[in-house]
Image 1: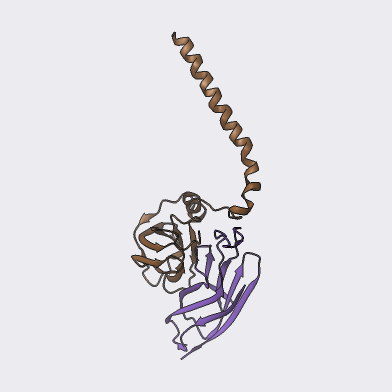
Image 2: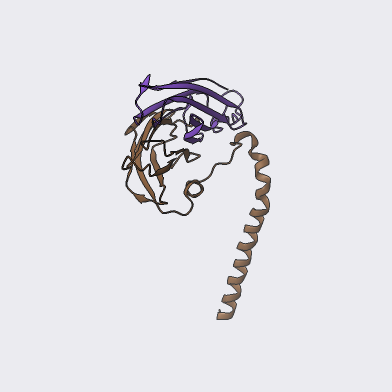
Length: 162
Length: 108
């Protein structure tokens, strides 16, 4: 085989790959019609998408954020959690904290927004966890910096009703 | 549907004291990921998406909720007491329905 014919063969393959990608793309808009009955009606973001929506392109530094969660959650339907962010107490330097369950079908859990009246950057609530996974909390400070904390939780019975 | 918001705050506080405010509302927080056991169809999502706490008309704390918040959402937060006054708590679901409750805080 000459160099030239080899080149042609490659070109043809590229064309074929390109054609099948186009075919898939043409089919995709039809998918939501199938999806109505057996699929969730509300689309969920992926973990990177959820993070980007919450904090943009910021690169959080590890630290300052403490996640209080059980090591093992027997019931994933209601896992109590508490998050506190280090603050010098007088400055109210924490603007918000965004919480993510990295392997849930929708990784968003909640975003908590503090105010100059907060006094203490600490919140508690209860979350659903579909499986054993990492829980991530990203804090946004009023000076524009981001800090994060992470904790792994073992889940015995998942809580997403699947 | 949601109902019966419940609030727990100290009976009285000092000015400047940081108090914990505990809130709970009855709501199923249907995730939209669950299939009805009989029909096999997805149960449509029905969740509270916003919680706002105001004190004397000023917003002091806010939460954006997603399906991963458990049924009957419990939220606790803190506030440095500026004076005596009135809390107002407002929950809003995805369809725009709201539930609110007021609570007095006395200062000793």
